[in-house]
Amino acid sequence: MPCSMPTPEPASTVGQRMVKCVKFQREMPGFDEPPFDGPLGQRIYENVSQEAWKLWQEHCKMILNEYRLNPAHKEAQEIIVKHMEDFFFGEGAVLPPGYVPPQSKD
Image (cartoon, rainbow, N blue to C red; front, side):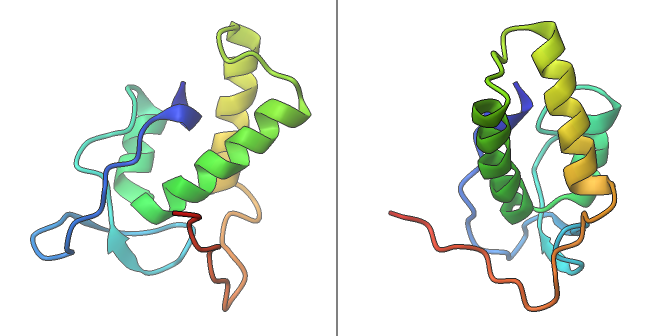
């Protein structure tokens, strides 16, 4: 399921593939390969940073809980994909100026 894909651990940005992130509107480390198959996976690979993907994972958890979705069901997967497209490429996809992502709880 797209929201539960593991995020690769960022190493240094030296030699790392960079993308102009649609969420943060700046060059950031991207994925080494698409996070899943298909046109949307390729679009995410080309336009979404690893950091923005972490934001999506948290947002997706909220969607699963709020809508009580079971990601094993096709209907739930379609809802998640629709939310993912909106999250990255729909209206409001860009974060507000000055946004600082929450610090990890590690």
